[in-house]
Length: 100
Image 1 (cartoon, helix red, strand yellow):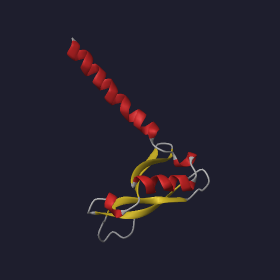
Image 2: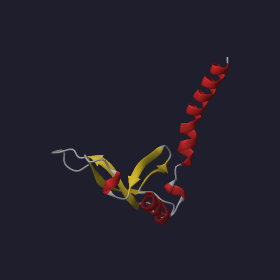
Image 3: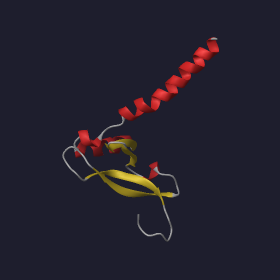
């Protein structure tokens, strides 16, 4: 019986953790552009919210991407700037497909 209780508790914890994690991501729309960009610079790589159900991983340097990825600049909405440059996203290079 004890194992069933522990398994149930573990299942509940795993089910609840994505919700809690999603709430902990910084929301660029509630921060200034400078604060949003500063988070990326200080962390090097961080997941930011930039709208309802919109989030991505932003990086400050190539070493936060894998070898087969390149950095692409990204702008997100911030509280004081509708097009705030916060850093880069890592994307796989698609040879011959042109720019993304």
